[in-house]
Structure formats: structure tokens, C-alpha cells
Image 1 (spheres, rainbow, N blue to C red):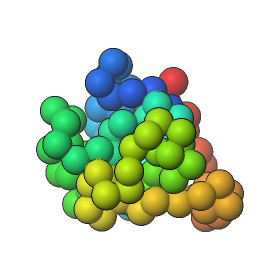
Image 2 (tube, rainbow, N blue to C red; image 1 turned 135 degrees about the horizontal axis):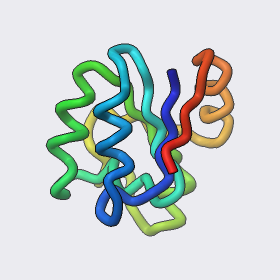
Image 3 (cartoon, rainbow, N blue to C red; image 1 turned 90 degrees about the vertical axis):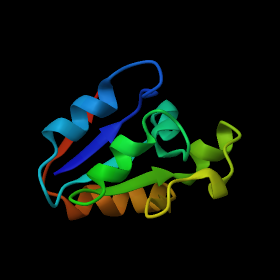
Image 4 (tube, rainbow, N blue to C red; image 1 turned 180 degrees about the vertical axis):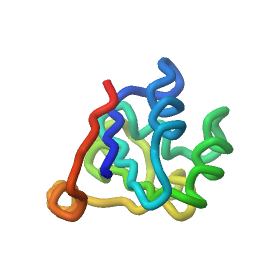
Length: 100
């Protein structure tokens, strides 16, 4: 399953709930303000890094750029993709769950 998170983990617990429900082999795509969950050095970084052992993480590059976040600040192992990559992920996974 592909999980999409569009809310900042610094404001809401959406990403935490998503991670708790994501099964091994799933993917999490951070979009819009959800991209803050991909940043190194935040209070949520350890949670994401731990989840990466079982779940793949992706972040939308243009959403990072729109928020002034440089790619060098993204947690190692999170793939930065574009909108075409988003479409590829939706096609790859048979189900998509949006966490609002």
C-alpha cells in the first residue's frame, strides 16, 4: 500500500499514525507540508528513521523546494521524487491511503 501524508508532523500526529498502521513493504510519500517529516534533525526524525527499516519513504522534490528545504536536509535513504515519480508510485501499489 502507498500512504500519502500531506500534514506537517510538527503540527499534527498524522505521520505518526500512518507509520503505526503501515505494514512492512508499504511506502510512505510525503507531500505538501508533509515534507517536513523528511527533514533531518527534527523531533520526528528518529521515528521516521526507525520506520525506514520496514517501509520505503519518498518525498516530493518540488514541495521541498516550495518550502525552502534543501535536499541536503532530507534524511538519508528517503528518495526525492518528482510528480512523475508520484504517478509511478500510484501505479506500483494496488492501494493508496491518504492521511489527512
